[in-house]
Image 1 (cartoon, helix red, strand yellow):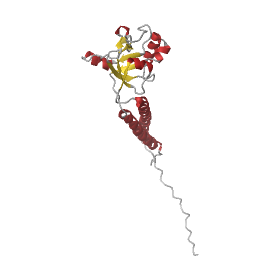
Image 2 (cartoon, helix red, strand yellow):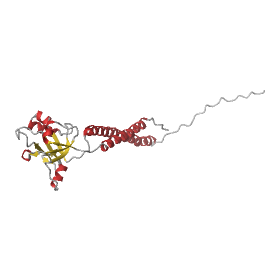
Image 3 (tube, one colour):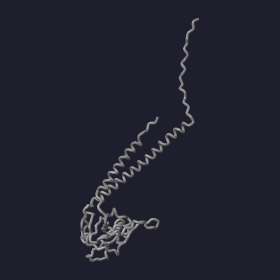
Image 4 (cartoon, helix red, strand yellow):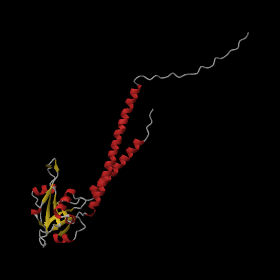
Amino acid sequence: MQGQRQDAPPIPFRAKARLASPNTAGNVARHHAPSQLRGIVNGRLTSYGWVIGFALLVAGGYGLWIDADTSPVPTRIGIGELEKRVPGNRNLVVTGGLLATNEAFALWNTRSGTTVEGTEVNFIPVRNPESASGTNAPPRVLLRIGPSAMKSIQAGHPVDPAALRGIRTTQFTLHAKAKALLAETYGGAAAKRMLILEYGKEANGPWRNLGFLVGGIVVLGLSFGATGMLRRPRITA
């Protein structure tokens, strides 16, 4: 009898399972831990970049706005005329004034009840010798002498009352502590209309503030690029 050949059914192929070693999970965790740490550090650095960039933009814009009416060439004006009108130029040379040193007062910063060296600011009223009110009325002009100007005076460069040169401060640049003391001493209305001349200060010009603006734009651009890279999905094998 002739037999018939029957082919055996194919045996399904099973891939050999790859057994993970006991250290595989630990190796994966150690592989991802430095990556996560780098992501956290880069994210914080990017956040700092945004803050610094915006701070530079604000500082530059504010400085340009404050110095917009400050010419490099000072305006020369007498004390009597200054009491009547205020020039648009904040860079001034005030002539004909009389320094009332007996009415001077000072402000300084303290830390733990101790005066911080180099923070003392002196205020000296500038009186008009031709004024009929004398010392009874609050002064219209006040001379502010900061630490750097005081060092120059102590080094042998005394104040010339005949020509007081400085930058007229604004309510935005005057310290809150000084505002409160002036209001307490002379009254709120007189303190608001008082002209405070920062002695010895020179006009900065626009370049410093423009540098802040450019620096802020650069830092923000780098922060924007870094933020985009951090948000980009990573392909892992």
